[in-house]
Image (cartoon, rainbow, N blue to C red; front, top):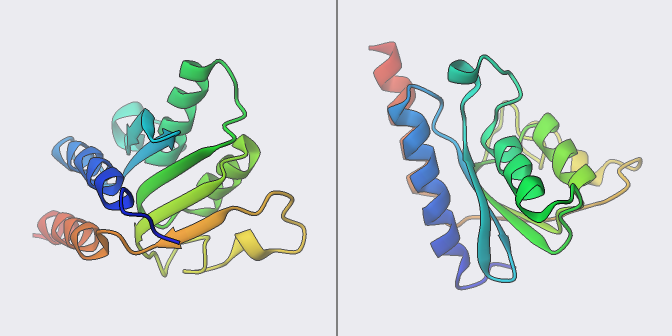
Length: 152
């Protein structure tokens, strides 16, 4: 269930996505929140870092683990501008994230129901609460504009 502060945190994730776009990366941003406070941020950097795992979500999880001194991130909500891929959803599961809120769906690679729903797989050992919707249009427009500009 979406909460009133979800839009604010998603706006911060969109700011991260804009940082990625400015660096020539696919504009995806993430913000990790615990107890109403942002504890980590991340945006896509696979091109600049020469790292195929440098997705916004993974970067935010790594930063949060370092900040908290623990890879277990119970009680956290991850806000991300694009539906997580299978790699990112698996990382969130291993981190024991409680909730994921994403803006734009990803019908080609999304793992929360877009292309596949790994969260509901019978072997999945830590289902996450998944919410969608805040800032969907803005996130989708940011992605659409980025790819249109790249094609031109």
